Amino acid sequence: MQKLFVFVISFLCVALSSANAQNYPTKVVTMIVPFAAGGPTDTVARLLGGPMTKTLKQQIIVENVGGAGGTIAANRVAKATPDGYTILIHHIGMSTAPALYRKLAYNPLTDFEPIGLINEVPMTLVAKKDFPAKDLKELIAYVKANKNKVNYANAGVGAASHLCGMIFMSAIQTEVTTIPYSGTGPAMNDLLGGQVDFMCDQTTNTTSQIKAEKIKVYGVTTKKRVPSLPNVPTMDEAGLKDFEVSIWHALYAPKGTPKPVIDTLTKALQVALKDPTVKQRFGDLGTEPVSEDRATPESLRKHLKSEIDRWGPIIKKAGVYAD
Ligand code: ASP
Image 1 (cartoon, rainbow, N blue to C red):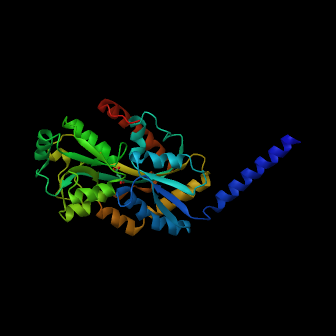
Image 2 (spheres, helix red, strand yellow; image 1 turned 120 degrees about the horizontal axis):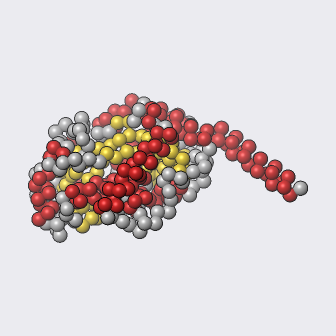
Image 3 (tube, rainbow, N blue to C red; image 1 turned 90 degrees about the vertical axis):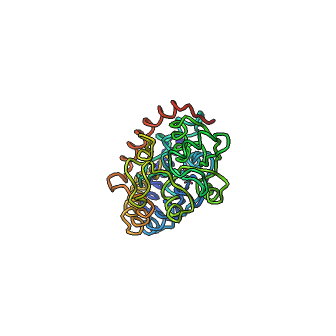
């Protein structure tokens, strides 16, 4: 009798959750941004939010949960109810955190359902306006000569700004003091105010400040120049051979989110990536949406795994760890 009761209850739960999944979404969806408002990840999230809201016919709300290089937010989504009402936008940090953190509370590969890739974004090495170095070679010489004086802003261990800074410092074999922020939005405010010296950040956050000449730029971190910043050399051209970091963003839901829900979110993402305003704004900010076949769970799963495999040994070699 008791067995029958348990069976009926489980059957009803499954039937109810699959009915809910078919009707999804029936209320607001929260997209968690793992960094502070006003930064590059936040910009991408807010650009996608409008068109995704239109497709889903339910509001997407962006919530900023900054700190610990994005790992606090990722952990929160990993532990959230897997019903499609809490999703995560994250970047390359999803693949670097496992090597950077000794005690990561989640597993990027097994605690999430991938929804799809969004874009690839170049980074730029930038400094406060009156920084006394006019090009990359001068910057390197200055940093080496003043390593106890200069400081570098980042968004915590695991952030893209951390990764880029780590590779830069290892390339020039010089460590400087790092100032961690909850996102490079607030870090940019301090760079503009001259309270910090330099940082490496996505073009989605630096392009307008570079164009307005409010900050100095030394190079873009991709192999090729960026069309929206045609006069900025690549780091390789500017003197640091083979310096290459490309950041990517993607969407995730907690593990166990029903497949029909993931399919609905993937479709909404694909529609948003074709939206003319999104394409235009992405282009202005030096990035572009991935093609539809890459904005899928399968493609993201593969990409995440290959990025974890790629960055793990590089980070281990650099010997950088956090607890
Ligand atoms: N994406 C930035 C970084 O990783 C942080 C941010 O979006 O604010 O440094």
